[in-house]
Structure formats: C-alpha cells, structure tokens
Length: 464
Image (cartoon, rainbow, N blue to C red):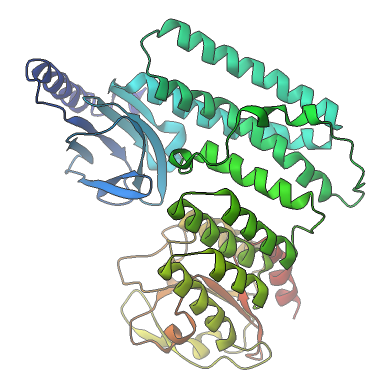
C-alpha cells in the first residue's frame, strides 16, 4: 500500500494540472497539445524519451522528485513508445490526451500503470503485453503436442481474447478504428506468432520427422494478415509475428536454422516481403547481428555478408557490418592477445595482459546499444558463481567513470578511453567476448554473452 500512496499528493497535483489543461483546451479551438508525464521510481537516468517509429519526438527530464511533464503540440493519433534507461514500452496517444505514467524500474513492465485522459486504452495494452508474456511461458510445454492438439490450445486462447475485444468494443461505441485495430493485434498476434513458431520448435527436436502433418487449417489466421503493413512494423506484436512467419517460411524450405544458408535465405525473404525501406533495413541489420551472435564464434560467412550488403540500402548499416567483418580478423585464435590499456573506475589505466596473467579469463566488451546491462549482470553472476576459478573482466566500449553495471563488482569493471589500442578491433562497436586461457592464448576471439553456446564455451575454458 505504501508504494501506491507514496508521493500521492504530487500525483494529484499533476492530474489536476492535466484536467486544467484539457478544460482550457475545450474553450480554445487552437489548443491541440497532448500532455505526457509521470513519475519514475528508482530511475536509471534523468530523462524519458518519446519515440514514433524509432524517431525521437521529445526528451523529458526528471525533476528532483523524479517526475516529468511534457507537452507535445499537434500530435497525430497512434502508437508511440517511450524509453527510460534500457527499458521501453508502448503507449497509445490521441490529440489532447493527458497521460500520466507511474513505474518502478526494478520491475518496469509489471509496475507500469496509467492515469489521466487516455489511461484506459494504455492499461489495456500493457495488460495485453503482460498476458502475452505469461502465455509465452505456458505455451512452451504445448510445443510437444500434435498439430491438432496444439491448434486446439490456440483456439481456446484466441476465443478468450476475442471475447475480451468484443466486450470492450461493445462498451465503447465511440472508440476509434485505429485503436480497435491495435488492441486486436495486441491480443491475438502473439498467439499467431506461436503458430508460426510451432514447426520451428518441432524441427529443433532430435527425433524430428520431416513429414509433420500440418493442415492448411492450422494457418487459417494468415487469411486476414498482411505482411506489408509498414505503419505497424515498429509494434512488437505485429513485428514479431511477421518475423516468425518468415522464419517458418524459410524453415519449410529445409534449411537448418543454424546454417549460413538459412541466414542468407532469411535475409532475402525480409528484403522481398518488407516494403518500407527503413523498417526493412532495420530488420536486416538486427537479423544479421542476431545470427552472428548465435554462432558465438569468430567466423562470418562471405555469402551472408554479400547478401546483406545487397539487400540493405543504408550506408551506415553497411559500414557497421563491413567493420564487423574486419574486427573479426583482427584477433586470431591460438595467438597471444596483444596488450592494450583499460581504465578502472578510479581513472587508472591498467594493462590487460597484467590483469589476466596466468588466469583463465573471460574478457567481455559491452555496448548498451546492442546488449542490456541486466542480461550481462545475470550471465556474469551465473558464470562467476559456477566457475570461481575464472577471471571475468567487463569493459565498456567508449565508456567513462560514470557508466558501469551496478549489479556487478566494480573492481572487475573497466572502460575504454579513446586512446586505447582496443579500438582497433572494436571499430564496429558491436560487443565481443574474448576467451583466453591461463597461458595467455586466445581460445575464442569473438564469443557472445547472449548466445546459448557461451555456456559450453566457458565451461570448456574452466576445464583448461
């Protein structure tokens, strides 16, 4: 109860201000501003950024009470998303809305609640998101069912969600068509993603039979879904469905998910299916990096790179991937690591070779643009506990003494200054993990903390 009532007076004041704004706008036809504000418990930074289709709309700074309030002139109805720290979530805004959020960053999505004009829509969307996360865990065990039994589970869940949708629509006859469309997608598309993912889950099994009997009825949802809705490509429920559909389509051609051939054909499928150049380039980049991470090795297939460069039209993306291919070759497995300096949080430069001398070491370079601090912390905490004989050293690419991972020991964290020689093999600034044995020999020059393969790779290093 204390969490809900803390700073209650502040919340009432902000809401009262919202009401005053809206009331004032009713008497001024030219007043079209929308207001977005709220309070952040345990903030991770001093600002909140509002986006539309990955383009920043505005930045709102927190005051001394960790509250913010911003005005958005001439806003168009639709989906937006806001980011704070490494977390983000979607919101739906209408002109003249006055939306207030409240959340605790320790449980970002679970504590996010809305109030003010526009709150009901957004509480529906966040509830749908949280429910889809629960469904994801529940359906994991259903992938062992036959196609017909799995489809029955989907139909049961779909009926409940469509009933909820119809109930809302019947009680809100004046609701906009745009929001009704978004709400229906938020409810149902995560289920349709699971249908597309079912064959992938089957093909990953050791006892997989290629003659899996899946009828056309299994994919009946496809009849009313278009894959080229550019305006929805930035919405998680729609984007995830489109991606799962394309994975399933390439998988049906008989390619192994972990093969270079699969990646090449998936890149081609993305290029063929997505019309919007920006969203197409974004997905091509993310898929290329995702599949590179999966391998957790210092190899990049030339055909994969050539396909990406042919399909992607963004010069910055192309430079990123070209730099990555060059970075991979800068450190050779089986060689000794060339020394360079890293800086501790007392601003003292340290020789990396002296730090890892005579110890099996995991040297991980991180960049919050590509990997979250929470994931790093969880992985390193797990590995450190399981393999206490290993030395773990975290290095922030382009960091400074103010930026670190607070859930890990500061004594094992460092950052790179601009003069460090490490930048010669980090030109892409894409995170890399280097595994080095106690003899100082590199055994893996481009492992990935986000890959499943890293568990076995670190286990092997610990036995070295």
